[in-house]
Image 1 (spheres, rainbow, N blue to C red):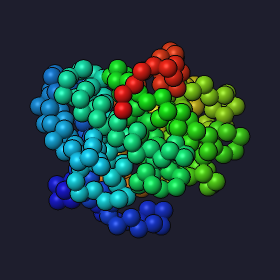
Image 2: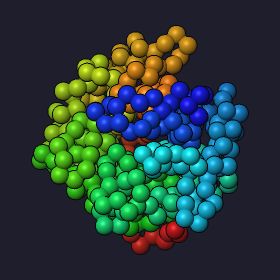
Image 3: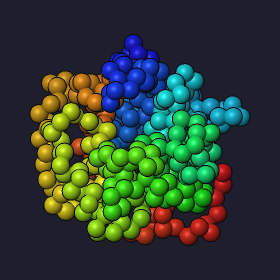
Image 4: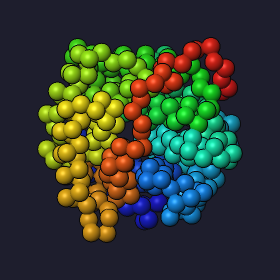
Length: 322
């Protein structure tokens, strides 16, 4: 809750009041902390933080909805409409990664239910996700997390609904801008660096073959604002780091150097990162510390995807269960 997480502080980033979103997002904040701990090699079975991981995963499993209309949701009972889809996606990603790493039966069951809910709330007409499945379009910020859920579930060997993957690719096409390498938050809006980073990371990680010209266009845009330029935005840095790490080129080397320099110089003596970042008010210092750690774990948390076993390249005839 806000008393223990420090989340839900309203600073109206980008000029919009979201009514303290994040203040009741315990499952999302737990999920981010779990992703950071698992990214460093801890599971509920091994590592110096095994007990912490165990308790975090148990909390998520106990928070998972068993109500018919929300069956499988990991959003938790008290989240706001602005944060419910995010909370489910982040917590589900942690559960799916735990299942992929350990193949633990309880994690696999929870992950499978969470993935079914992710597919259930996808907007059929556009392939996107928004605050509810009855919203008209969807937005790219929501889509990135849900796509990662399906990708991690695939790595856990849980069958995926191929229609969900087709929908992801359809929505990604609808928010492309420039010559195809840039992306906007919602269709027909102005492209932003954060959304360009999220689109590129999602396309690369699900296994799309992104044309070189589109990669170059995206990289030029992202490299105009590397870490240390402008307001600190760990959300942007997370997706840009995921994307550029997959490419292993000059842009990656420049970005990684700036990222390390800035994050290591701003870390507090007790290990945390302060919440005075663009979205830090909503997530508090657990959010900022987890996201900074995830940026610095990218080197070994996501392998370079140069194989053909990714969800965008799978045969659509593979069996799946909802």
